[in-house]
Length: 445
Image (cartoon, helix red, strand yellow):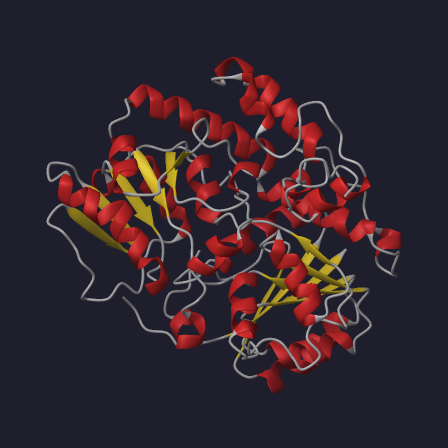
């Protein structure tokens, strides 16, 4: 099976959330027999921070301009079982035209930034990577975000079918390791600077740091402005490549996740950082958003902070409490949210579509963990099994009834559809500091 991708970047993890996700998914797909060809425009801000030069089992094709890439791309597309264009592809519209006019078996658009895409439309603008016909001519639209975002892709951009393919982690890269003194802290945060996360970051990290002057707080990332409100006990580590993430996470008692405003407002958009930190065995403190409890059990596998006091309360937890929370989160992630699970899910999504030239020869999925976003398709049954394993740790049996589906009740047709789309099933509805350009500043997870 051959997949051809036109995307933002896989070669540089600087200032974006795409590269790490693609590396994990490509590694998992090639392990399942796929060949992946990734077309990436060679831009200076990524070239200067490149940390991947080749794709094992596939090809990374860097090009200077679209005209120079089109002939090579056309040849690859005519051999492709699946062709894909992603959000923030610098040549998204030209790549879309080439893909749609090719002999590729299944034509897919993957929006890794769906809330940003829909917010642009809401403002009356059209994203630079989406053409005049929207997504109407693609066979499938995949979305990093579930819930209402899927309806938005269908109603606002004309997608024939929108399905979530959530974030994930490669546990061969992100795993517990020895802590490093340079990254040591009571609370850490890893993420590219964005203005729309600033208020939450100040509330959940900077203010707690001011109130706990004896504790050390650590921020890692890129594009932080000089006017950022650093405190005397807040340490900064400039952009870290993915192979440094495990040491960063493993060196703090607790790590913070802050979600982009558009993504938090839409919900069902788990940051890849959540899965990375959990795979590294670090306890996580996160802001809250609709759908969080479909990926982690709040209070049991992850801690939730809405204000400064919540952060202080989390910092006051004992090492034993945090270790128990992180162990349960890691178990959950390794079972449901690995890159291998998403690769298997990707194949299942393709296999569920009307047979195309490519899918007739699709390889059988190898045994492995149940795919995470059919955490969706399996809905109640999977959650019931997971809660059964932890029943003795829940404070009250009623807690098992607060996730939208009563324990032991299987959703009907409407319920299965809603679950697959990453939506809640209503009660009684079981029948249903760097450079770069502005265009690329919306990409951090």
